[in-house]
Length: 617
Image (cartoon, rainbow, N blue to C red; front, side):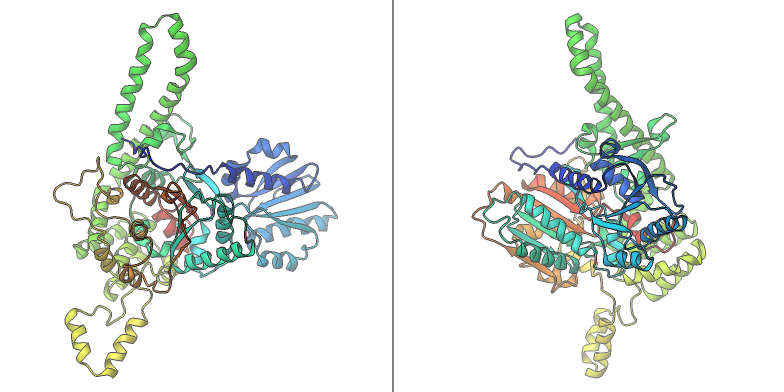
């Protein structure tokens, strides 16, 4: 069963304008090199570019050959070279090698570098160091909002997570502020803003500055979107670390959805070749199962197959005229639906095979135990066994991080033992990864004196002030504490269920984790929207270590229609998962809202761990 939207649900804005804007700007930049030119594209810009301007559009604007920016330089015979790249140092070196090789050979050509989404000063410095700053012209293609679906916009910046949450690098904040500014210029103003997290606060303040500089652009307009909510990924690592069980999340975990499309291999297509499939609301079959718990998907697909067969069978008793109508009007649609159906059935079978092999049930049981705080010793033994069997370095890390965050850090004995076993099992080259995870607060060790029992803390109150001072120092020296248990209790994240949790008729957002856990990020959003502020959530904000970093900004709502006040834009800084998207879509249907998602990139537990890893897969 699909989730029908309530008849009174507000209409979504049309985001195709963002694609047109990006395409027009790119064409304008390409035409500044009149005549034939070769285009060098960085690998991770290829998929986004394909969604904006396909090869035939590029050809219309005199792009002759396309090359991929990779380690070995390509040989191009064109007189004009154009580079479309992310602002990365290694790309500058690549371009410099090409230009300097031309100089040595005595060739003169025209070079243009287009940075997307913006150029950084460091890149220009490298071009200057390499002695080619005067030979190339630099431009920006401010393409930072790609509509992946009717309600999902992605900045396609997967590196945002590592750059900001590990390295503390703030350069992408400007990109976020510019993207919000563009959205508010096209669909704004946004009367109510809420946010939590250091990155959210900085992005918000910079965006407001941009708005003030261009005062008056959105003045007097009726808002289309009533609320905007900014949320940092490090507010809720737990949700991102859990295995996904809604269909779209499982497809992402199993096959990797990249830029809105997925490559289904021969095991899914039941032919000898792979197929690239676009997954969005236009795929009618997918749209009905994407938010479903996986246990319901098979039943739904087989029912659909029976209905389809019945429609095909109708043609048996038709006369010529009816047959003609059937062929011209219905057949094409039925064939398309048939093709999609067999693909998704193939995907389901492939997921089932893989999950049975991994003993998925046992894994989920362990995750639920960690979330609820039961049988911690058993779960730790499961993780040790996982490491010893060398199931997968990324998976083992993920489970260790989940244990650490839910337990507020590992006790030193467990930390040392798990780390030693991991390095012995998967290799010492992972040592630096542990340091990264510690810095990001994903895998930490409790400091001595950190696991004070109630009795001990009472005793410490009686101890002399000097000794008590030492104890508080031990507390404050800790890395950011996750306080997951306390938050979970406060926000009721683990539903108390009498009897079975019926996944066919979900009763709350916990269905996206089989009824075991309500995603923390989604619960925060739900609570703030109910109150229209952070009032009454002070304790939660304190536990999230965000006392200074939760903000609300309301304007008078005289212009905002009741329709727009039911449209909410949620901005995830550092990535969001398909499970969170499904949970909020469910909440929207329950409460009569519609959510629109903007994320720096769609993420999942494996991508999160890979971003922290120093060992390149």
